[in-house]
Image (cartoon, rainbow, N blue to C red; front, side, top):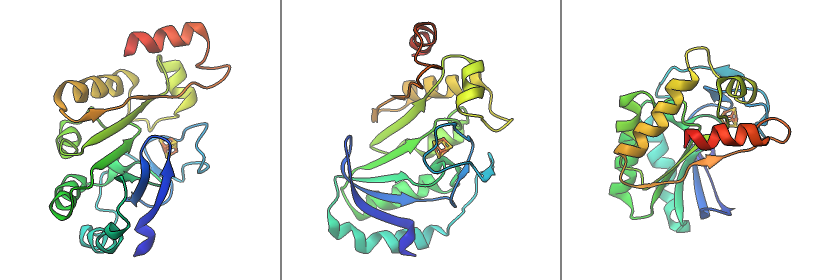
Length: 190
Ligand code: SF4
């Protein structure tokens, strides 16, 4: 089960980051045009226990001795699709004082259950790549059940409810979202 855990890997933002991969390869709510993992093969909004929670914990325990700066929920898809992510965060926090970070595309934050599940993470890094629905469709190619305005409201709601560290990651795509007009739209969103 060690493939569930990777690293620690050096991260510019997170130092030595021990990764936890909670969903199968390219199981995601988006199919981003820039995704370094290639096309999304399973575009879904269905939250599931894709890997047994006990297996994740057992795989993680021996790797805590690597003493990373963060335990990072991320990997090869969208981690908030993991339906037991809240229990996972709570169990990690019983095992160690190493802070838990979550890297998320933010697409499911409009769901109160998802926001509640991740509330005990120490750091949440959501993404925002577009300031308009046109760019959102072009850059992120979301699942049909995810609407731009709804996604944006989810980011705002989390910001208002969450007491941990919130680092919004804004990715500008040359020639598309890096124009002055699009940057102004993005700035209005945040
Ligand atoms: S959200 Fe992340 S994993 Fe999903 S398609 Fe975009 S870059 Fe890839």
